[in-house]
Amino acid sequence: MNQPVTVRHPLALALPKAAPAIATSTVLILGRIWNANGAEHSTGNAALMVVLATGAAAAGAVAAAGQRGDSVLAGTAFAASGGLAFAGVAGYADGISLPILLWAVATAVAYGLAARYWRTDRRDTLAHERHMSEKREDHGHLERVEAMRSRTQIEVAREGAAYTTALAEAMTARAMHPGFDPLALNRAGLPELPTTTPAKEN
Image 1 (cartoon, rainbow, N blue to C red):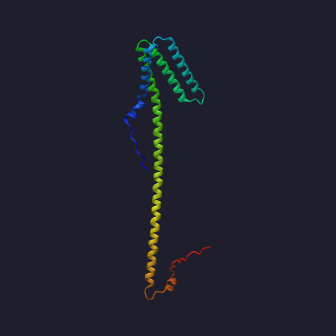
Image 2: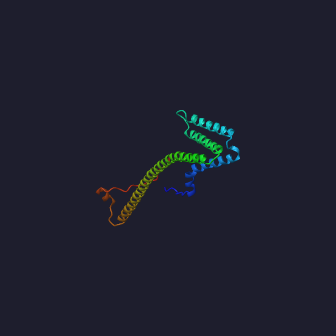
Image 3: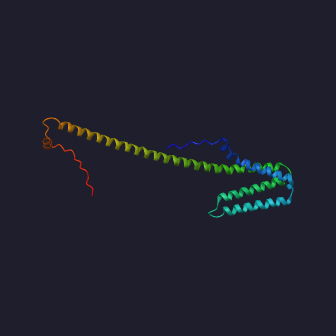
């Protein structure tokens, strides 16, 4: 059975690739807006961001600890910690050079982590598509075999019915000839036509 082919919009294909840059750029912009609204050289604001970033990193470490650690939760917590630290620096620094440098580093790290996830997702997608293709091939083969078997059975039944009809017509035509002796046929060893009697109801 043919599966419907879906074509994704180019924007839907490009958006996941641009997500890391969009995220780091958003943090940089918000940090600079915060800087312009009083966070520059504010020790209290810097201390708040340090506490939040440290708490998020600790939560990520706890989530990753143990044999049953949740990698998704740990990755989210570490990403939040990095984002908070980046926002704190962008808000506290008086110049734009350090925030831009941190933005470039954060973007590179985000793309490095995302590329690993994309490779894993692509490998899983290819494996799933290969598995589904093999299943479709197996089902298609079984359907073809069953269709051939059904056609063969229908043809055999049709030929048997035609042969029986032709034999009955030949026997009937032969019986109408003068001098036909059915006992002579029996003595010659020819089989009798089966007689069908209606089944008695119990």
